[in-house]
Length: 121
Image (tube, rainbow, N blue to C red; front, side, top):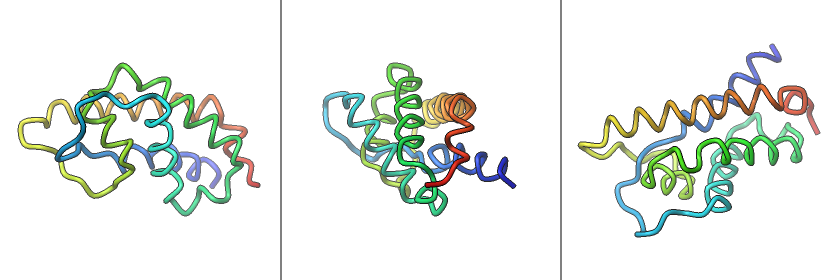
């Protein structure tokens, strides 16, 4: 049961990730990406039951893993914290690459903080 909860926690940012239809001209900062990931994760029902410190570490780790690897468009989508945007036409390959980067990062960080994430408040 615990493994299923951790697996769900890992999948949340990946499932919530879509490319934006538009965005600003500049690459978002790491802090902005971290806040966006936290917003996305916070919207999941399992998250409030997790330690705030563990979630913060998990998001910081994930941000460090994806920043500089994912496209600017994808980072902007994360910063927006939105879950219902669509992949832009012609950007499907980019989306798939970025989705894989995010999935690997969330998995790696969840493994790293597995014990802390499994503890509740």
